[in-house]
Length: 220
Image 1 (tube, rainbow, N blue to C red):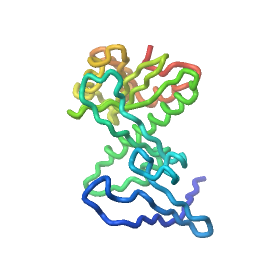
Image 2: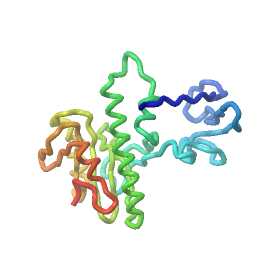
Image 3: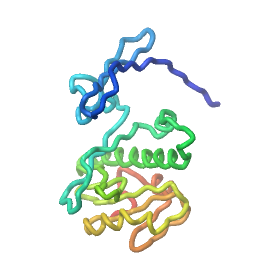
């Protein structure tokens, strides 16, 4: 039996729209009838007040920093943001006539992969692995980079049942910059493939294989 749970709250932000990213306040208030008011802000990295709660404190979201080790290309410096749950993301994400369903589903799938990677790194705490992403200023992007003493993986996630040559462009560029890394593409197809030395694995099979007692599938 399915049950629908509904919660009502007010999210209050007081301020004015400004011309610059730096000049508006990040402080907001969450009000729920019968409960103490919660004063929140953005993470300090996004110019929030470090004395107030932010989404990461409340385990609602997480940041993924850029991978910048031994950078040979100009890369972006801002982190990516993921909600703690792919279903919550799909529920909260605004959508309209210009939003294609496959784009929303693709972002949700990426978030689901991140949740598994983050938990795997937590399981193997003694090995000190990190999850980051790689994006050049020319637009090449690898969704996730797992880096640690046991593995160095570059992972691209595609919400598609087929793999096209252009889907591998970012992984090829990353492999050129970091030949020590193992490139891996996760997609919605049903058959494992290998194209130009890059493994392409059905994402559902890969997610089921994530275990704390073993290395991530696709790495050496």
